[in-house]
Length: 111
Length: 111
Image 1 (cartoon, rainbow over the protein chains, first blue to last red):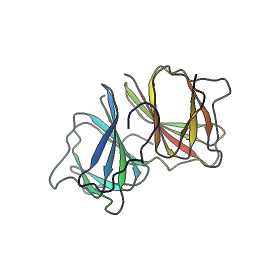
Image 2: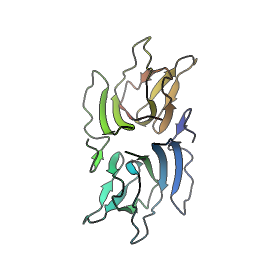
Image 3: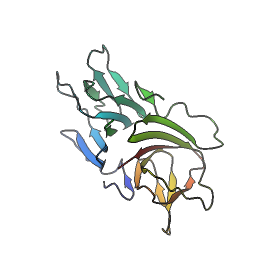
C-alpha cells in the first residue's frame, strides 16, 4: 500500500472486519489519501465528526450514507458518488452496506 | 461536477470523445482533483509529461498503461490500481482501453 509503484486499491481486503479499516496511501504536509473499508459499520449514535481538515470522499465500491448535522435526511452514496466535507462541518456515517464491503477513497486536505 | 453536494463520478460520461475529457472536481491552492475520461487515447509518440506538481492517480474504471522515461515496460493499471507520480518524473500514457471508457481520478498536489 505504499505511495510509489503500482498498488491495487481493491486488493488486500480482509475477510472480516470488526471495525473500519483505514490505510494511509499517501501523506504529505497538505494532503492525506486514505482507503477506508467498511462492512456495515456506522458512526456511534450521537457521535459527530468535527474535523480540522477538509475531506473529499468518493465511494469506489459498495454504498453508504453520510448525515450532516441539521439535515433531515442523510446523503446516500453509491459507487462513484463523491462528496466534499468542509472542515468542521459536523457529520456522521449513517450506514454502510451490510451485504458487501464499501471501499472509500478519502482525500483530507488543508486549504 | 461541483465540489459541494453529491455528484456522480461515473455519470455525465459523453458518448464519444475525440480527446480526453478533463473535469476539475476540486481546486485549492495545494490540491486539485480531476476526473479524466479516456477512450483509447494515448500520449503522442515522443511526448513526455514533465509536471511541476506531484500526481496521485487511480483508475476507477477501464484500464491503461503509464510509461516512465527510462523504464523498459509500461505500468499497467486496471480498475483500482493507483500510482504516485512525483513532480518532474517524466511519463506518458502508453495506452488506454480502446473498447471501453477509462475513468481516472487524478489528485495533483504540492509537497
